[in-house]
Amino acid sequence: MKALLALEDGTYFEGEGFGAEGETYGEVVFNTSITGYQEILTDPSYNGQIVVMTYPEIGNYGVNLEDVESIRPFVRGFVVNEYWPTPSNWRSTEDLGSYLSRYSIVGIQGIDTRELTRRIRTYGAQRGVISTVDLDQESLLRKVRLSPSIIGVDLATEVSCTEPYIWDTGSDRWGITHEKKPDPKKRPRVVAYDFGIKRNILRRLVDVGCEVRVVPSRMPPHEVLSMNPDGIVLSNGPGDPAAVSYAIESVRTLIDKKPIFGICLGHQIIGWALGGKTFKLKFGHRGANQPVKNLLTGGVEITSQNHGFAVDADSLGSNVEITHVNLNDNTVEGLRHKEYPLFSVQYHPEASPGPHDSAYLFGEFLRLMEENS
Picture 1 (tube, rainbow, N blue to C red):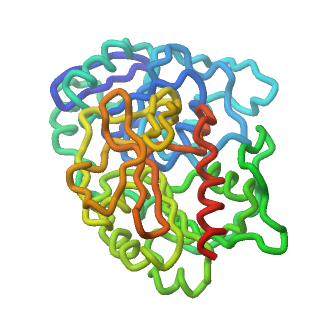
Picture 2 (cartoon, rainbow, N blue to C red; picture 1 turned 90 degrees about the horizontal axis):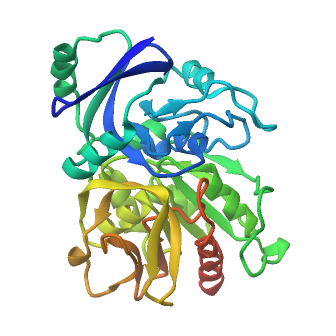
Picture 3 (cartoon, one colour; picture 1 turned 90 degrees about the vertical axis):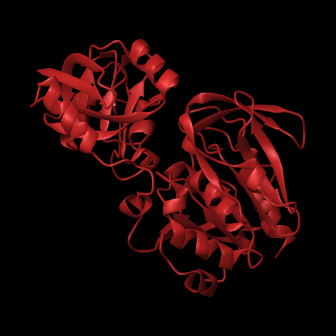
């Protein structure tokens, strides 16, 4: 099955289709992780994007039901150098191509992903289309240039839950890194805003002893406060943080009322709520090997990241302290308020996939709730 990838700058890549047949549009971005493609596919933060894997061979360990990070894959399309259709792993229940087909996700393989990645790094992330049904280059170029940008679009509402629910499952795949669990009779109640939340955030919260209730992205703050939580988590999610103005207003109301921990999009929302701004990165940070310096300790953490926007350090007021920076480009990776019980990080301390260097932050959130109970 022939397939064509077209970028809005007029660049074309010919390859073979795998997964679903059809045509799909999105912002073309790359991820540098060697493993973890299933977690990447099911990360709701990729809603609206076509993901390019820089590691050359993808699919060799198949797919299983345990490693998904949400109810289904949310990527718009998938690009690999070589797709491996016959997986070999004792945990595998399905091959990757069949999994993508079941969820109507179009993939393309057999292209030079090194060349594509270099183009994105040089010229920035851009709109693209993968098609197995229209192989006319000029036709695809016209269509991709008419496709919408992700800037200014609320993509979080598309991936958020519609009703609150309880999450009570922890992690059984690795050790727990916090120092202690709270008294079972005094388990802190956490409300997690779902802007596209990954399940491993919820597992990590349960691991440190929290009772977790997940709520939709548009739940009014007074309803959250009526649940009398000990703390509030603002989750990761897709797209432009400036487009989720309803969430920014909600967080402004919640600041100083309860301890808050923001992750990825949640971190950016906090930045806006504190009077700051965000800007779009040239090609973003996506992968499991991003070096971050903790300015509070001087230590360096290798982190898992997935974002295309960043908080503007110069837009933050004097009451906000930057706690972490990216060592590749010096962008803001973490902040805390000097007066209110609030902190956030741009990266993913829950990993999945990725290193566990930053898992201690869930213990930090636990201590923050204990100190403000």
